[in-house]
Amino acid sequence: MAELGQRFLHIARSGDWPVRLLLLAQITAGFVAVLGLASMLTGHPVLILAFTFSQALIPVGIIAFIIVAAVSQRTMIVKAFDAGDVIFSEGESGREVFVVKSGSVEVVKRNAEGTAEVLTTLGPGEYFGEMALLGHAPRNATVRAVSDLEVFAMTPHHFVAIYTSLPGLKVHFQALMEQRLQGLAQHAKDARQKDIGERAARGRS
Amino acid sequence: MTSISAVDPALRNFSGWGNTLDWSIWTTVVVSALILALIVLGRFRYRGAQTAPNALWFHLVCLGVFPLMLLIVGNFAALEYSTTRQFCGSCHVTMKAYIQDLQRPKGMSLASLHFQNRAAPDTACYSCHVNYGLHGAVQATFTGLRHVYRYTTGTYHLPLKIYEPYPNALCLSCHEGAKRFMAEPAHLDGDRVSAELIRNETECIQCHGPAHVVSKLPQASLRPGGQ
Image (cartoon, rainbow over all chains, first blue to last red; front, top):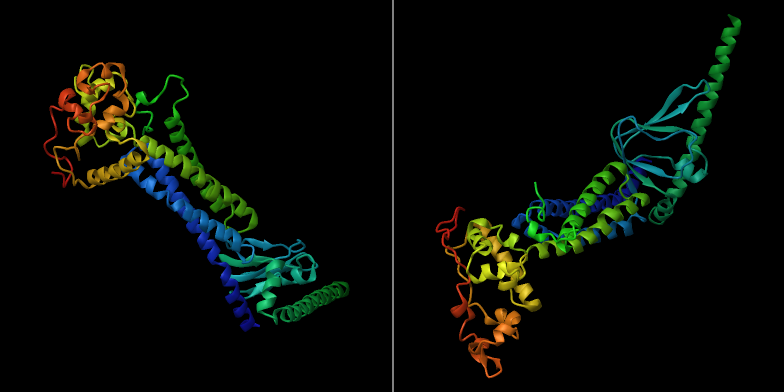
């Protein structure tokens, strides 16, 4: 699973460069705008000259933006979260799968008494949220960032596209989903038994 | 801090709405400020999801639409402003004396007489020193770039000299056919403008000069490297 996760992360990393290209477009547009403001407000000949020449950067920024807009439909989006942020909550609807790029998350589920229990912690290369994607069901756990986090968000569209490059992925996900469902069922069963045991103990006393 | 147009009342017209240059300058300022504000807003609002579909619509405005507006309006403002005497006079160490001569109320130089008669007062330097037509404008742009470079790096030489004999064609483009010009026999061969004038064999300023009366030309540069 870890190996498949690493391969998955390798493919997912291809979604990183549009963000950098967009930053380049923002820097070029911002640079020209700063020169525009400075030259028009001061009237300094050197600034006016610099502003005139810098406008050659505007088409560069626009082309960079067009490339980002064109490829972003096919590449995964990088999302960043601070430590403690909730990526999604139990019961929410959602169809994105998340791959941890950096940082770590904890998967939290409320038990019958309403207390939050940490089921597992996931790190770089591991993914979560796939059960909602494949099962069309609401999120069955809450996922929270443990540290500063970056994740690749994969929509069903991306997921289908990745099938072509990783044919074993669907099988893997289905197996994983069954495994996690069994884990959840076991968790519920344990909680129920614990509850029954506690009630019996209270009855005896 | 003052804007380009705020420092020169001569650039304003009487309508109170400002002229084309005013509008282009302030549109450039507003569009530049909007681009900066939207980029910063976009960085925060779509933090961690810069390439999400709704973020891309937002970025389209600040990275596509407004920069295109800036390209058009900004270029117009910069090029239009570079034709004003205020721009020429901004290299004040070398040009201040010429601008002062131009604006002298009782000045007798050609430049001063033209300025006092309100012949293109806003663009006094440009109007008389730039060849007409597209070629002239392009040539003036490159010459202006060279001037700014020389001024900035302090690699100019004093006293300033004109590159080439002043072409009569620049005078004739306004004066040819004018009543007073055509009434002067020295200007004509028969009923046509003298071929001597057209061929620049006799320069207009030989009889009508001096072009500028600059009594106190700066003899040494205040900038490092100037000679």
